[in-house]
Length: 197
Image (cartoon, rainbow, N blue to C red; front, side, top):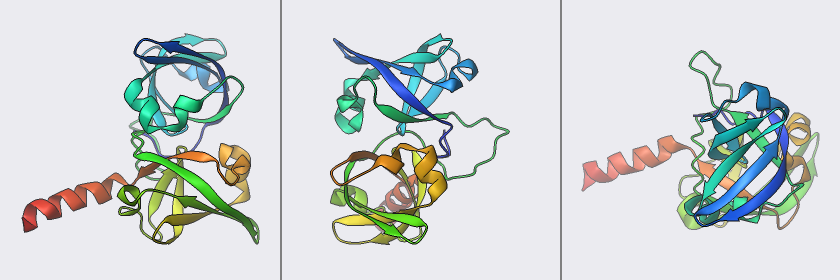
C-alpha cells in the first residue's frame, strides 16, 4: 500500500523485453532503503524489486501491467515517480493508493491558474464513473484532489511543490498518465449493487 506522496524522481536505465513481459532497471537515491522482494511504486504501478544495486533496483513487469499502464512505453532516460511502500507506523499523508492502475488517461489542456497549474485529463467512462469533485485520484502515482469532473475528462490543480517533485511538472498535451481511482468508490459500488440486486 502507498500514499501517493512521491519519495524520489528516478530514472529508467534499461528496459529489456522478456518472454513474459519486461525487466526494468531504475536508478534512485531510495535504493539503500530497498531490499529484494520489497514493493515500490513506479509511476503509480506497484512493482517488486527483484535485485538492488547501490544506486537503483531491477523489477519484472508482467504483460498485464504493460497492457494496463504506461510502463509499456518506458525507455531509458525517462524520469519516473517513485514511492516506497507505506510502513505500518508511517503517516497517511495522501490517500490509500494500492499501485493497481485502473487505466491510462491522456493530458488535455494545461494552463496556469495563479500559483497552481490546472491540468485536464481525458479518461474512459469506466474510470470517470469513480471520479468525484473534491475526491482523490492517483495520477502517475501522485495523490491529487479532483478539481472538477466532466463527461469525458476531469481536472486537477498542481501546486509548485508537486510540479517540482514529480514528473507532472513536465506534463503537456498528449502525455499519457497512469490513473488509479479511489478504491473506496469501487467497494461502495459493489456493495450497493449486491444490496439492491
